[in-house]
Structure formats: structure tokens, C-alpha cells
Image 1 (cartoon, rainbow over the protein chains, first blue to last red):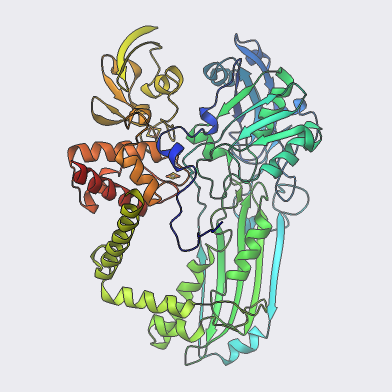
Image 2: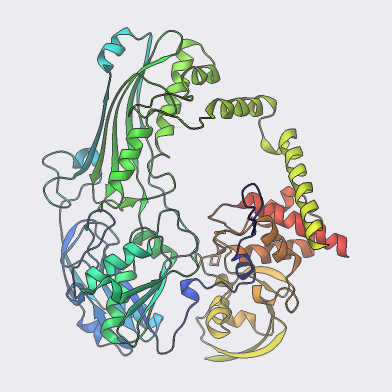
Length: 444
Length: 157
Ligand code: FES
Ligand code: FES
């Protein structure tokens, strides 16, 4: 059998069900005798609380209200550290933390019953600025230290290089939190099978991690948990941490009926992680010809109330802060810090997306100071085959950055807007014609 | 409770509705046509797009009672028997489908556009689908798909 895939247009196997509306995302599923769950979420960023669910439980159509004491196993989950509580027991660390889950005969009843849950908050001092959070006297989010992670690079001698430099540019750059806003809000169904297996259907990026954390929270073996991943309506990193999975599992086991939960857009924003807001202080030096000599940088990433992938993200930011450039002397301190902000985790780029905001502006400003054009200064410093990165990695495979820059320069100088760009249009026409040919061939 | 009559995907149907139900709710829960999606519930994303009396609407922004005696077409109502609508086929062929959650709305939006304007320019296509968000951001291919569909429709007419 001959396979030919590389360089070919391959039709998606699920294309047909998706264009006809047949593809089933979790919110599209329904089981007989199903109950519905709705989550009560914290409105305070940092507080101790007590909760009284009696009134809600007495509402007609409500079958029960889950609180922390209903978690049969360990009340925790998390991709790196188990720092999330599946349902908070007595303390919330951010707006949106789950405090209770109403299970009812209909979505509307469950929703309405949320209002009847009585919560008494005792607010705690909160911290929203990661620089503040790193100080000794700052309120602590988990344990004794808000600094989750410190990544270092020490290469060459930056101080000496700064002394010898012809030009130094120093500034601080900030990026904000970003939400994935995947188009399908979180949803799922769970039910118990006849043999006691607990099945959870939810759109997820990590069925295996989900199974592990659900098993832990249920006090069950992983083999007793089955995760089904139906059609997933986008994720982009935002479905790596658990949201409703444990709630569904606990309720299905407790009430012995299938449970369905669907978040609306607002709850989706509250429930899942964000892209880390990062502050990057960079001091960059070059010689009179524009050759980079040194970079000293301090990077602080705000991971909010939970660590999620903070370690990996801030490590990656620390590695990528040099940009695709050779710099002989590099000093990096990259920190991930807990605050009471929405928690941050994986999102497209995983820590590689924020640093260009800093390193590319530094490049432009060095070029400006030296009277060089922005392309030449980059060409002078680009990684090429055989380059060593700041972490001493030797690049041995293809490094086509020069070509990329050439294409960029050509495109920018010819015509600024892609729509009016003649090459772009011709290229598109050509591609279109090729495709047409292929289709005619196939459909003949 | 109120009973309304409407035609959905060519069939006459009767349904009991609550006064606070949206057209989207009766489509998804009443008629079990789950191809129509809910992405935002407030008219921002277009995932719930359907044709109401031939016009593109966000089903989350229309109350169910407003659909009385109307004709509704959802994604399930496109194409004939086993044959896909040329727009659906073009979405598959150009790779305009990623996670697929925006796809039903996007296809119907393109349908509404091509019914009005069978030979749209790229700009007109972009404007035509501007009420539909694709968070997988495959807009380039979606525009290509609409162009291809327009071309194929013109060729068969
Ligand atoms: S769900 Fe109707 S526009 Fe988003
Ligand atoms: S294909 Fe995922 S939102 Fe458009």
C-alpha cells in the first residue's frame, strides 16, 4: 500500500460530520434520566468562607448540593502541582473558585438554586501584583512562598560586556492576560456503568491526566475511570487543566444518574486558565557594528492563584528572551509567582509568545541608536546552522531564519498591505488553479 | 406555555414553548437539531446562525415565540438527501474546517451571502461572514471555501 501524505492536501476524516452539524460536542449529548449541574463560584479574590446549602437543597427539583465534603478521595488536582481544590473547602484564592455544585432535574432549577446558597465570606488580604507578591510581607497564596519557580541562565560575563559596549538599551515590557476564548464553552456528561466504571465525557486536551486526577478525587483506581473525548470545539491550551470533570464524576457516583454540565461563556472565562501576563526587564548591549554583546533580564510571570504550567511557561520565556539571536553574555532570572489573579496556564506558544514583545523592540531601538536599519541588525545576529543558544544548545538542524527575513523584507518593501500585494494574489491564484485541477481530476 | 407552528428544514412542526425560551433552545432541545451551536448566548459569535425566513439570524437573540409561522433552516436542512450543499463540500475540500464548532454557522452565513450575491469579491465575503467568529482562526481557508463554492455554483447553473 502506498501512502502519500507529505506535500499533499489531505481531507479531514471528520470534515463531513462537521459541515453537516452531525459532529457531537459534549453539550450536544443527552442521556435518559439525566440531571444537571451548576457551579457556585467565588466572588472574592481571597477569603475564608462558610457555606450553608440547606435552603437550596429544599428547592423542588434540586436533588443535592455538592460541597468539599462530598469529594470521596483527595480534594485536589493540577497538571504539575496539586494546588487546585476540586471544590474549595473553606478558602478561595481567586474570583471564580468553585465552592459548591447544585445538582437538579433541570438546568434552570440548578441555576436558580445557586441564589439560595448562603455564603459568609471573611475577606483576607489579597495581592494582585506579582512584584508585591514576591516580597516577604506579602499575603501568601499557598504555603510559605509565592514564588513558584525561579529559572536562571548565567552565561559569560554580562557586567564586563556592558562596560565594553558601544550602545545599551534598557527598558521594561509588559504583556497582559489573554483568554483562549475557544468557541465551545466547557461541557460534559458523566455516568456510572453497570460494572461500576465511571465514564466522563468531556472536551479535554489530556484524557490521561483527567483520568488520573478524577481517580485521585474519587478514591478509585484509574482502571475504573473511563474518559471519552468527543468533538472538541477548540482548546489552545485552555483545556489542559480540569474544570468540570471531577464535579461530574462525584455527582454521577453519588446520585446514580447521568449528570450533564454546560458552562455559558461567562463561566467559561471564570473557569479556565489565561495566558501568563509577563513583565520583562531587559538590558541589551551591542558593539558599534550592531553585534549583540550581552543581555541581562528579569522576567516575572503572574500565574495567578494556581501554578498550572507556570514552571514550563516561565522556563520557556527565559529560554526565548534572547530572541533568535546569538548573544555571548546572558543573565536571565525568570520567576513564576502566585497572586490572587485569575490563574494562568497553557496558551498557544507556552511562554514563547510574550518575549518577542521585549526582544524585538530592543532590537529596533539598538538599531535606531546606531543608525542601522532594522533588517541589517537582525541579520548580523541571527541564529544560523551551528549557532549556540544561551543555554548552550548547538543548532544542528535546519535554521532558515535568514530566508525568512529575506522574504519578510521583500514583502514589506514591495507593498505594505497583503491585499494589494501582487505576489500574494498571484500565489493564491496559482494555488487555487492547482487545487481546481486536482478536484477536476478526482471528480471526473 | 404556548404552542407555536413553524416550518423547520422543510417540515411543518408544532411545538410547546416557554415564554422565556429562545429560538436556539427549541432548535437544540425541542427538535434535537444540535448542529446549531451556542458559543456566547449574546449575539457575538454567530455559532447559532440559522436562516429565518431566508434571512441570517443569531438564534440566541430571537425568542421562540417570534418564530411563530416562520420558516427556519438549520445546518441539518442544507443539501439534498445525501448530497452536500456546494458550500459544505467546498469547506471540506479547502480545509476550512478545524474544530468545526463555528462551521455550521459559518456555512449558513455563506449561504445567506451567496443567495444575495452569487459572485462576491474577497472583501464582500469577509464582510459577509464578519458576524461569525472562528477562534481556530482559519479565516483564509474559509474565504477560499466561499469563493470556490460560488465558482462551482456558477458552473453548474
Ligand atoms: S451563541 Fe448566538 S451569537 Fe454566539
Ligand atoms: S473551526 Fe474552530 S472555531 Fe472555527
